[in-house]
Every structure is written in C-alpha cells, then in structure tokens.
Length: 223
Image (cartoon, rainbow, N blue to C red; front, side, top):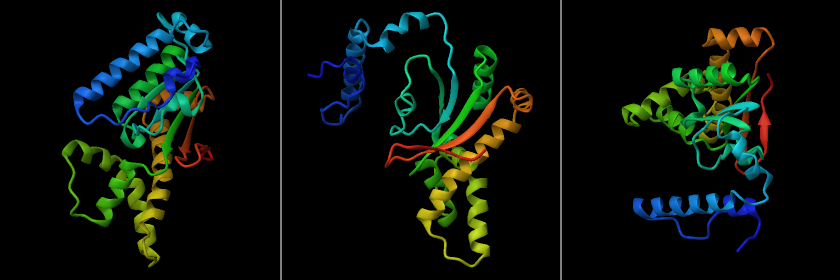
C-alpha cells in the first residue's frame, strides 16, 4: 500500500468499476474513510483543513465542465480552499452559474474567473450531432444545455456550409469547444452588471481555457 498521504487520497483505485448503485455507494464510503484517516497525516494540504472550517479564501473561480475526466483541483495542482469551483455540463452559463460567480467575487474578493472547457466534450458533441442530425432527440433538461451551446456551434457550422466546404465532424467539435468557451466568457462579462462593472474597473479578470485530455495541458485562450 502506498504510504504517500496525497496518493492515498487521489490514487485511482485498482478495484473494478462498480456495476450497481449499492457497490458505487460503498466505494464512496470507503474512500471517505481513507480521506478522514489521512487528515492527521503530514500532508500540508490536510494540515490546512482546520483553518477552512469557518471560512474560505479561494484565489480563483473556475467554471468548468462536469466531465469526470477533468478534476479541477488536480488539474491545477491546488489544495483545499484554493479554488471556488462551479461545474456544469458543457461549462455553460445560466443564471445560477452567474449568481455563483457573483457570490464568490463579492464574498471573497476573488479577482480571477476561468471558464474551463476540454477536448472531447460530450455536451458540445451532443450539440454538434443535433445540427448534423436534426432528428436526434434528447430529454428536455439535456436539450436545455444543448440549446445554450447551440449559438457558438451554429455559427461555425453555417460558416463552413457557406464556403461550400465539407463539414468534418471532429474538426467542427474541436472548434466548437473553444467557441463555446469564448461564448461563456462573454456571457459572464456582459450578463451581470456586477461582473461587468468589476471587469471594466480592472478588478476582475475573466478568461477562457481548454484542457487537453491527452496531454493534461491547459491552454489559455487569448483575451
């Protein structure tokens, strides 16, 4: 068994993927027991935890995708209390996401927001598929996410069609992921008077980024 406290918490388990909800629940319970057991270890991250019981002071806000392959704190090598993380499929911007960003900015004085998309995004892929195959059907709730992504994908699709070029699905998805990030950045900047005023005053920076699942690299988009 690995004696490294950090790896005891973050190392991928060697067990097979659970096949029932009860098995999945048991894995979570066992994982939490290991986490609690590690709280007294010498890991600096764990030693910081008691100070976070009554307050937090995140230095950045991350609006990212819910994709299980993009664990934000691990991707940026940050610990407990360092990041205020908002995750939603497709890193879309809705009133609840804007409100969450406003809360962190006003409550903690956090001055950086990063909209984090990622390669092979399932939500963006679903949106592209609805354009290429209009008969594709999703549940009303999933469709609401697709609809928020649609404008950025539609513009790219129409541009490609207007030039008479064949639309390559993989290229369209890749470009749409970045277009969707840029759209979310714009919606945060202009969808809230609070955030817009802070950006204009130079008190808040909102940027977009894309995480590469293959390399692990985060590429920040030009502002």
